[in-house]
Structures are given as C-alpha cells and as structure tokens.
Amino acid sequence: MNAALLRWGLLGQAAGINARLYCAAARLSFRRQFAYPAATFWGLLTNLFFGALRVAVLLALFGLKPQVAGYTPADAVTYTGLTQAFLAAFSLFGWYDLMRTVHRGEIVTELLRPHSFLGFWMAQDAGRAAAQFLLRGVTILTLYALLWGLKLPEGAAGWGLTLLSAGLAWACGFAFRFLVNGAAFWSPDAVGIGRFAWALMGLACGFLMPLAFFPAWFQSLLAWTPFPSMMNSTVELWLGHVSGTQVLRVLGVQAAWTLVLLGLARLVLARGLRRLEVAGG
Amino acid sequence: MGRQGSRPLPALYLLRLYFRLLGAQIRSQLVYRTAFALDALAAALVTGAEFAAFVLVLPRFGALGGWTLGEVALLYGLAELAFVLMDLGFGGFDAPNLSAHVRSGSFSTFLLRPVPLPVQVFGSDFALRRLTRVVLAAGIVAYGVSRVDVAWSVGDVVLLAGSVLGMVAFFGGLFVVGGTLTFWTVESVEAMNVLTYGGRTLISYPMSIYGEWLRKTFTFLIPAAFLSYFPVLHVLGRPLPDGLPGWAAGLSPLVGPLLLAAAFAFWRVGVRRYHGTGS
Image 1 (cartoon, each protein chain N blue to C red):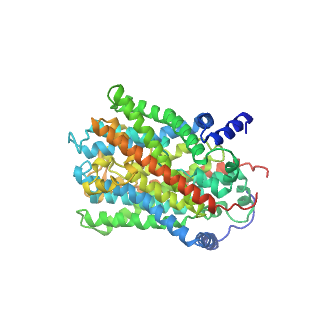
Image 2 (tube, rainbow over the protein chains, first blue to last red):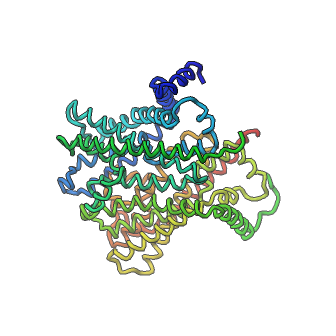
Image 3 (cartoon, chains in turn green, red):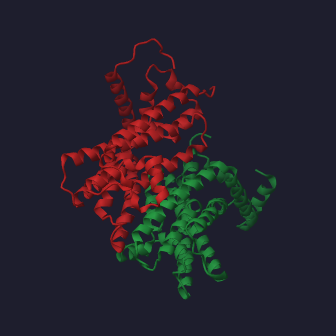
C-alpha cells in the first residue's frame, strides 16, 4: 500500500474518520469499472434487450387502460428503464464480494489495515455504484429516451430530491447486502443464503414489478420492511408520484432504514470478527 | 483427439459411465445437507418470485394482451420447465463452467481420458439443487393445464411434450455454442446471455405482445416462436400468425435438434482449435 495512504490511515484511526482515505478508495473503485469496456457493452445490450421485453409486457398489461394504480403507460415505460438503469449500480442480482473475502481468508489482510472495515467497503461500493450508474445507467436511460420516451423528474428540486433518494437507496441496499454477506462468518456456504436474499429483495424492492401494482395487503406488508427504500421509493420520486411533505417523509424513511441497517451491519461485523477463524497464512 | 483406429465404445457403456459421473456429483453435493437444502430452496425462489410478481399484479389489469393467467402460466411454465431441464443436462457446457476448465488448462485432462469428450463434459456439472425448479415449473404447467379451456387430446399432449423436447435441444445448442466460444474468447460470451436467458424470457409470454420486428426476428431469423408459442397457440385452438400453416406448430422437435446438431459441429471445430495453457 502507498505509504502516504497508510499514514493517512493511521491518522484517520486516531481521529476516528478519514475522509481522504475513503475518497481515494471510492475513486479507485470508480476507475476500475472503466477497465472492461467489452463487458460493459455486452451488459448494456443485455439490459436493453430485457428492457424491451419488460416494456412489451407492461404495455400489454395496460392494453387500452389510461391509468392503473397511479401509473400511466408512459410511467410504466420509465419504470422499466429505471430498473435496468439501477440494476448494476444497486447490484440487484446479488453481490458476493465480502463473502468471498471471508471464505478465502483474504479478510485477514484487510483487517490489518488501519481503517474502518465497514467504511472502507462502503467507500469502494460507492465508487463502483457511481461508475456503474454513469456507464450503464445513464446510457440505458438515454437509449430509453430515444426509443420509447422517458419521463424525467420536474425542476431542480425534483432532480435534487430524486438523486438524494437514489443515493439513499444505494446506501440502504449496500447495508442490506453487507448484512447478508455477513452470513459468511457463520456458514461456509453462505451463497445459498445470498441467493435467497436477492430473490426476496428483487420482489420486495419493486424490481420485478412496481409495488403500486401489488394487492393492498402485500403493499402494507412491504411497507414495514426496508426493501421499498432500496429502489421503489426512488422510482416514485422520479415519476413525481410523491409530492409536498410526503417527499420528506419518504426520504426520512429511507434514511432511517439506512441507519438501522448500517447499525446492524456494524453489530454483525463485530460479532462475526470475534468468531472468525482463518486457516493457514 | 486420439483413439483413432480403436473401436467406438458401446452406447450402453457410455450411458452407464455418464450416470456414474452424475452419481459422484450428487453424492458430493449432498454432503452438506443444510447448505444443499437452502441452495435448492433459493433456486426455486428465484423463479417463484418472478412468476409470483406477475400473478400478484395481473388482477389489477385483468389479462395480458388477451391471455388469461392460466394461458400465460402454460406458456411460462413450459419455457421454464424446458430451460431448467436443459440447465441440468447441459450445465457442463455453460460458458462460465467450461471457460473455467479452458482457462485453468484442466480441459486438457478431459482430452487425455479414453472416454468421448461430450460424455465427460455432460457429466462435469450437474447441479442437483435445480430439481426444485423442475418441480416448481411442472407445478406452473399443471396450474396452466387445469385453468385453460381445452378438451385435452393425446395429440395435444404429444405436441407439448415435443415442444419441451425441442426447447431442451434448442437451448442446449445455445449453451454448446456459448461454451465453444470460450475456446476463442471469454469476453463476448456475455452476448450469448441475450439469446439464452433473453430467449427464455421472451418465449415465456405470448409473442403477440412484442413489436413487429422483435416478433419476426424471433420467428424467422431465430426460430424461437416455433418452440412453445406456436404449439400452445395450436392447443388453445388459435391460428398461427403471419399466415403460417397449422403444421408449423409441430416443428419444435425438429427446430431444436437441428440447432443442437449444428452446435455440436461448431463444438468439434472449437475443440480442434483448443490450446492447452501449458501447465
């Protein structure tokens, strides 16, 4: 590791936090995403193809109906665009990086480094997510605008609040992913738990269908979980389905869940590290 | 490949060998029972969640382009059933699995053994946990069958069985092509995902909902519509689109194996081109 970074890290530990170190981690992780242009291109193509299928399914469901559960057909098209745009950034198909580090024992090297483990992983994931959103998200949305038309948030306030909500959705989702990956401290086969969790997340965060289309009982059930905060809230803000003081309430719920899940992630990490056994070295 | 001049091994012996390879894999996968159960449950949940989302929202809309839930379930279940059966059988050819062998050089070991290469690759990755998906998919088909307004005849059952067979061969062929591509490159393999997973999703819904160009591309350029959409249309007593004759609904068991045969021809070219990693 770079000596300057290490010194910053040590200082940071003394101060409890070190913004520059985490910024550097995020920046490097951001840049790494640009290293595989071919993978990005094919990923984009797959996103667009699935986007086209999802547009067709939703428009066929609408038929001639002008509006269902507050969604117009144009809203539904934009919704499918947003799911394809956030897919990579929010790792909605799953994320096993931390799990792998624990199972392979590489976590030891990381624990030797003088910085907050959770903070460092969060910084790296922030860089990855930002790059994925720029590379794949913005491109997909542009293609959507050209092919099917795209609804955009209204005004500077609309944009600002929607982007804030997207940031919170990422943070909330990251905390959940980190928690699920924490299962690796207890089980050598945490992958199954992960698959389980991602399938649940896909249904409950509004990735498979907008939550507004679900039956009322299912929606009120989901309202008690953190999952809507991981995507659906941002979609509703983007489409302008939430207005006035309700916006602040939605953002507040997202922030509250993020804090709760990050707190839990810290707890699980502390517990897990106490149990951690690494063979060899 | 060596073994020139030697007599071909009897088919029964090869089949026994294949099941031995599967048996070994199944035993190893069952060692950690809890992990296996969780994996198996999760595998079903992925499919289950997707279909559940559709079932939960459909009441708000009534129907999908004139198709009832039972009719869509039939289409969706058949596609999923065939795809997961194919995934069980052709897992060894799936690009991520095969490219791991090619990159590490362990593919050379396959070439050294006195057993035909395909038998070894077929027997190299059998994910037993996918059985729960087979059960779930069969359940979705059964639900569809019980809900559609059809006086079932033997011909209908044969037509749908042939449709599943054709789909298994078709998607198996795509897996073989994707696996073969890893002899040249690992990068563009992702492009195959559009055809395999994209194709599966595409034929899970009535193809009349897609735009003209998408539907025609997947009928005449890539004959995916013949696999399950046309057979199901026929069973439901509806005419085929684009003025296609009724017998076109029975072409699935022809289209699939043709693609599979072409894929294996490509596979042989790829194997000849394979270079070991030198390790």
